[in-house]
Length: 165
Image: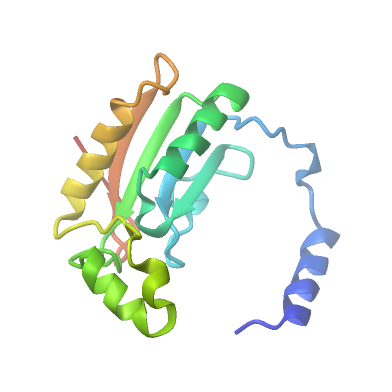
């Protein structure tokens, strides 16, 4: 685990050479990427993007949850994004697991507090989970007119994305 002092020292080094202060809050590429919080993934690097190019949303599984939709609407309406990319990945901890199994794993510490929580598990097929999330997003009436929504699977073993139609 990184100590608080290490985090702060790392930030001081970062701040000493920081050059991004002139970047606009509006994504230069009008792009929003929704992907998993998995530490093996670096959305900017894996898509050849730089700071300021895109809004990056991350959650467990990269799911099109109600909160992700809220953020996408804000990004589109206030920041002008028009392309949304949904990326799930291989070897995700939310594959082949059910809500009940997740609740059971968490029950020793969280017990009843997670009894009704939907963890949005992905099921057994990563391609199908991307397809379902893209379909949900494309059917979302709050999406800006003319929005493009694309889905991909990121392979954590080789760093490549594969489009999902």
